[in-house]
Image (tube, rainbow, N blue to C red; front, side, top):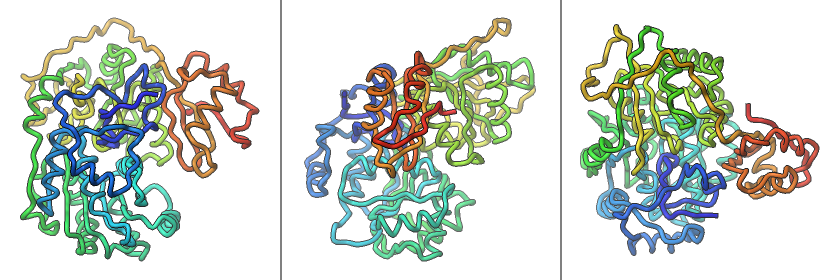
Length: 494
């Protein structure tokens, strides 16, 4: 197994310096979705960080020596000097780790209750941020709270876990506070990730309430890949130090991201989209639409055309959203059709193409969408599909877009992805680990280690990517087999 010192995944939007074995599965040897070589400009980990790791009993033996990029080093240094910070840095640049190291340095073993609150706009980002913290292997308990699952179950978990770090979406945390499910009197640090989204007018009531209930906090960090015209007064960041890494990164991004204009001869762009996607082969792409209904329509059309695609938007049930993201990130589908929900805070590595089926109204949404590709030193492409009579937003400069001609006469053809996904009806609560699943597939299903890709284990189920070729025959071998002595449902992840 190969472990990289810096992982250029979107990491749960951002982990770059701390990567655990869980993300370095067999599929990486061919697809490399999470890991890329170190940049020569990275600096060695400072003595201060080493002291933090030692003091906080972090088990980092599985990753060796850690290095920080310039933004992370600056954030760490400024966190020692100032209480309130605003960090602006591109998507995928490592913001999560940038605030987690100073966060961990503030935690105290003797202190009971929640010491740090991390607010995020989506449930996926909450889940991914929790996974990042867990990968640090500290002794401090962590938990995430978000909509889409029963509040009562979370309340029970809050009592059991008694987290030092609480990661939550604003609405769900407000609900817990009002019901007396969580005590925030010991909070020392508040982090608002994707603050431009969290502080929109629609979240004002929740955010104002939460901040008013965490006045014990001595530090507040705001982070995003896009700036906000105005930060509400109730956040009280007038004296905050602003760290802006956007300008230099945007100049670098222009060298790696190519933007194209694709003209649709029809007002209905579906056929144009289909032909465009066919030119990508098996390279992964995200198609953005402005509305859920539009995303649904695009998805249904592409499925009928035998495109390997998945749908993702806020109106879907949690388990369906989770499955769609796993299949896409695991490589068993090549196209994700989504609203702007997929533009922020998702662990979606190795995205080569971004397609704007609809252009967003706001420029920052356009920026976040494009930020899904051309990550770190990788190259990427963005495509804007336009019909002749379509109204263009003022921020779009068509002169800056390259022309992308499509042959509307060739029949689109789509090859199946290398990987396919399996659903396993047992998980962490059943004492099932990734190693258990890999061993089971190899021993009972005649899979080789190279046939097994990314494995995600949830509380009561798991997903695993396996090589598509021969998977159906090997799946039949597992029909009546037991996993760690337990009968288990194993089927394709439809």
